[in-house]
Every structure is written in structure tokens, then in C-alpha cells.
Length: 438
Figure 1: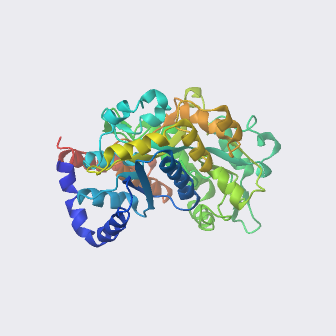
Figure 2: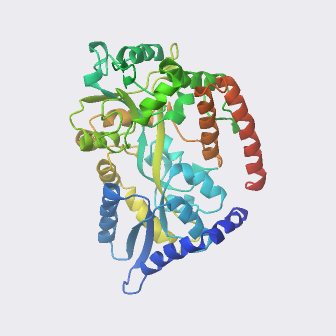
Figure 3: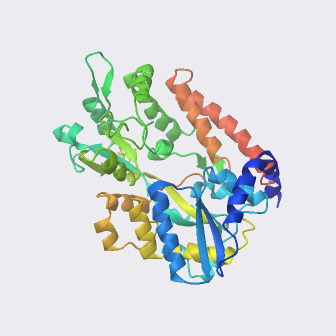
């Protein structure tokens, strides 16, 4: 396939890297086992890896024909592409759903449509928003592991009485703007001490156009400069205008690592923070004294139809093109899709479930007390999937650069987005010619 040939230069450029990875894989297939050995590459480390290892162990114990061996691989996306182009891929790769299009366009994935049908796996088993993230051009290329979506975490201790519960928290953006002004504080030196919210921090910045009814793509074409997009990024830019671009930058420079006690929400510097269900675990680990609740993002005034917005993400299992044990690999993937297995994995990783059916036990025993909210948001009509386009990463980069230019005063939102639109249209046309041959 043409896409595979495009990867050839990667294999040459990183031959040394692949030699190391290949040796790991070869070692994992040494003789001595009567079972078919399925090599599984996963990006996770720490607790996430341990939770998945329990799933692997359960599968291996459930039958005597297949042995799955999981390896934690850094830079997994690049190494999987290299291994596939070199003809020696793992049997299973734990990648992100937003890589489905990139890998499929490159001819680097096995089509799982027929195997899923054979194993009785279908769209009806999943929350539709997540299922659509693993289907591309009508074909199935992956199945889920742990998903996520974002909501707004709120530190109750930093709230005035009128905002200190989910029921009282602002429902519209004009109310939210008043909340930002009411809660944000400066110290005696005039520097920002506590800010109610910053759209650049937390998880979900790239969904902001969708919060206003816009997006990045419309009817299969690039569309980053529509009226709703301009309105969205103007609102994001308003925070730099409200607090001062340099003052905001200085304030943000004092933030610590995301998963640490110095996280701006956990250290009390941000009163509200957009993130996924797993963030509840960070609160437990790094500052369990925080009294928090979670709510959906407010919606634009006069647009109740835009309420319930959330930005989706999804971890997946894929079978790279040319995997030597495709059927056995899929048998393992199908095992992970079983409701008890999936729910245990998602609870261990503090995630919601991608499955259409959810048990009462899952909702009642889940360690994140707001899991019902995340589950409801993921199922809603306003749940936004990442762009299914081979240049999705470049779209994010170009729009990010445009927002930087707005904050630096180099261009108005309209000017910056118009320029990004022009560059992205040219990039998409080149991608269509060179990769998709259209």
C-alpha cells in the first residue's frame, strides 16, 4: 500500500531504535511455551500499567492456548509505525483513538470489522460517541480500553456562598465571567494570587470552539475561522485581556507539574479546573483535603441547546498491519471488552466506561464521586470527538499559534484565524494529494 511506502524513510532514520525494540520483541517469543505468544505493546507505566497487567493475567489464566506478554513502550506511536513499516510489529498496540486516522491512512492497521462481527461485538455494545472514534470510513480499526471526557472541578473552599454547590454554580458564560471576576484575587504586591479559571490550563482547551457551537472541520473541510470559532477564541483571549498577558504568563509560570501537589488546582491557585475523571485520583494522592465538586462547563447565553459540552478522549487496542497472530490478538482484545473486565479496568484507572451498559455497582463503587456526571456527559449529544483527519495534529498546532498571537497582541482573533485557515487549507490539500491520492 502507498501509505506503508511513505513510512520507509522512518525505518531507515531510526534503524538503531528499532533494533533495540526488535530485540525486546524477539526475547518475548523465545521457545519454551506451548501457547501462542501474543506480544502487546502499551504506553502505560505505574498504576495504569499494573491495572492492565491484571487484565492480561486474567486473560492468560482464562484459557490455555494464548499467552499475552505486555511490554511498556515509550514513544509507542512512533515505534509502532517503525515496526510496522519494517514488517515486525507487535500483535497488539495500546494507542489513542485520535491516531486511528493517521495509522489507517498510512496502511499501518489491520481492519477489525469482520473479526468483531465474528466475535459478536457491535456498535450497540458501546456509547455511540466512543464507537465512532474507532471507526473510519466505515471500517473498524480499534476497540476501547479506558475513556475519558472533561468536566469542571471546583474547589468549594474558594467559593463564595452563591457558588459553593453544583446547583448554585454558574450555568451560562455571562454568569461564569462574573464568577471569574468575583473569585480571582491579587496579593498585596498586585500580582495574581488566585484565579477562578484559565482556559489554557487543565484539559479541554481544544474543545473551546465546540463549546460555542463551532469546531475545526465542517462537511469534510477545514473550518477554523467561522463566526462561532471567532467568538470562542475571543472569549479565551479575554482572559489575557482581563488579567494582562504578561501578568497571566508570570502567574502560570509558578504552576507545578500536572500530577503533583503543585498542580495549580491542588495548590489553590486555580479555583476551577477542567479535567477528566482520573483527576479525582490526583486529588486523592496529592491533596485529599481539597473539598471539590464537578459540573459541566457553562454554555453561551441564549444557547441552552449547547449545554452539556464535553471533550472526549479514548485509549484503544489496535492490531498493526502484518501482526503474526491477528486472530489470537483479537481474542485478547475481545476479552477486554467484557463488561466485568472493562468496568474493573476503568475503575482502577478512575475512568468512566466506554460501554453502553453500565452496572449499578460501577456507578456506586467508583472511586470518583462524580462518575455519574462524566458518564452522562460522554453519552450526550454535546460530547465532542477529536477530528478524524490525518492532519489533526497540525490543526491543533496552527490554532494554538493563532491563539498565542492573539494574546501577544500581534493579531486580532479574526486575523489570526483567517491566516491559520489559509495555511491549513493548503496543508490539507497537500495531504490529500500525497497520502490519500485524491
